[in-house]
Image 1: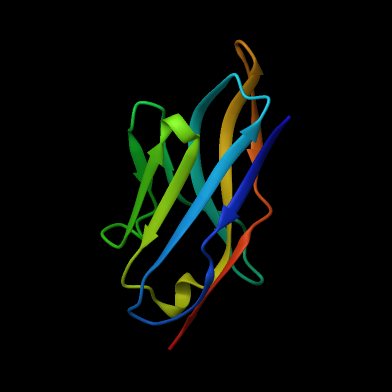
Image 2 (image 1 turned 45 degrees about the vertical axis):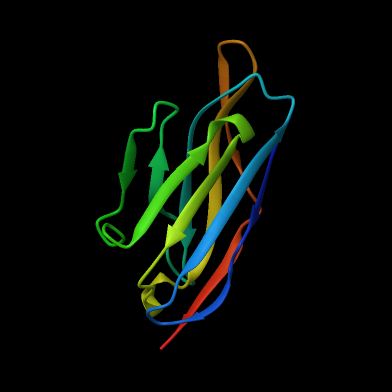
Length: 120
């Protein structure tokens, strides 16, 4: 199995910064894509940013220019640097990984979520 453990959430004032980290561990053979999603109260979970194993990134329009996703492939860890935070960024942030425990067979894995609260 694959476990994802997130850290770095918390309370910050508008305009501030936070850095989320997510480490994948377990019987990992290979990690493909990793990323972050978020879910605000009463809303559906939405994509924040993803990154492929080759470093290609994709991010939501609402966070472009403010959030940066990166990885340490050697550590199977993904980061989300969040700058210029806004109250509307308040949500539970979930780490995501597409990983394999058996060569060629990939599955989707999720972290437990970390709360990010931005006060105005």
